[in-house]
Image 1: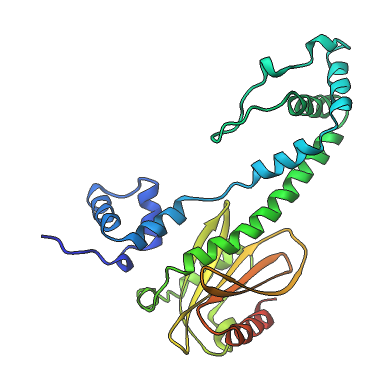
Image 2 (image 1 turned 90 degrees about the vertical axis):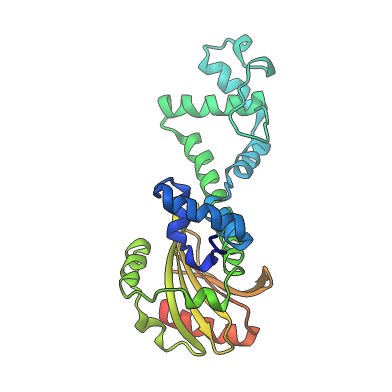
Length: 278
């Protein structure tokens, strides 16, 4: 009989290949058995296979702000003044997945007005609406990635770190993905940490670099980096998933330092990391 499979034997890249259907039948069977036996591995699979989509909230904000009377007149104008053809609830279309929600005539008129102005008026309103959506989406992404990182790192153990490969080539991979130069030298001077390995993850279609360390207490500590269009933000200390978290934004990148270590230790680590990275 085949014994229990250690979750540390299943790498993230192997889980991604399992999700994408790129494993052989034999390897897929190994991963499937491991998932049946190991709840932590199932949580890792769920994290890699999932991603929040903040667009619904962004569209809801736009809908609440839509000027109904003006949009109705604009839409009627595009129809040659035929007010009778302005849409009602009888002919709206559901465009979003579950939970199902029927779009109101106001939003359908807004969408039609945007299309008309893109064609006939240079897309002024389209730019405003899409620009607001993009800003709201960016805020949601930046808020969400902290929770996603915390959820993932909370699954780490000392055994997880021991199974990581400190591959020198991995520095080039994460540097290329992020568009910044990273190397072991940048982190050599950070106190209380021993480098264990790097991982290139993805959040909302964006590369997310994670650099894993073992602290002097033996607990895992991770430094995570993602690109962002948000303006610079100062140090902020919080807690997620039972872990201490320091995050900040500088020069187009968001940074997180996270671990189950005392706040003063994590703050010292974060200050040293910021001096090297931003």
